[in-house]
Image (cartoon, rainbow, N blue to C red; front, side, top):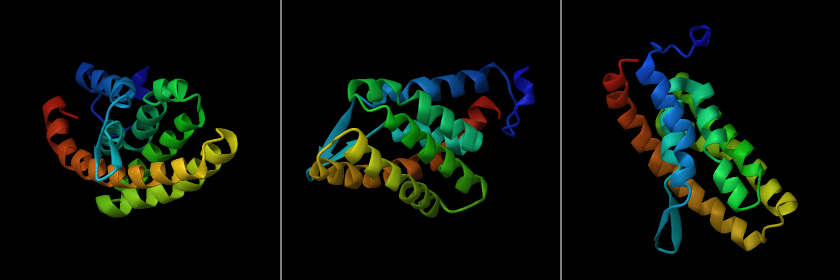
Length: 162
């Protein structure tokens, strides 16, 4: 039955297991960050971008959505789930369209940005100053992890034969 879904992937236990991992593990990575020059660098985006680079827009949406559940619960902000689905799905579309990684991640991020801004400020009632910090942190994190994910996706595809 799962073979009816066309991701241009050779479906086998390895590819199914990897997509499952990429859909669940961002929840764990969402708990961690490092601070560099007063900017939080998050880690969870790596797996969302990796899912998008390997499985395309649907993989990016699955990882972005399911991988954001725990963070959404912790922050009492369910809108994070949809925002990360937008980010992962659009990055997957742009990468499939053969855009370079910087153009793909910036376009996906700037399309996602109005959602993030409106939901965080008006629906989640976050202070504007905090949201500004989140906007900058996510921009930098997204650029970093998109590049790493795109480059590492080639090697991971070879390992799992997809």
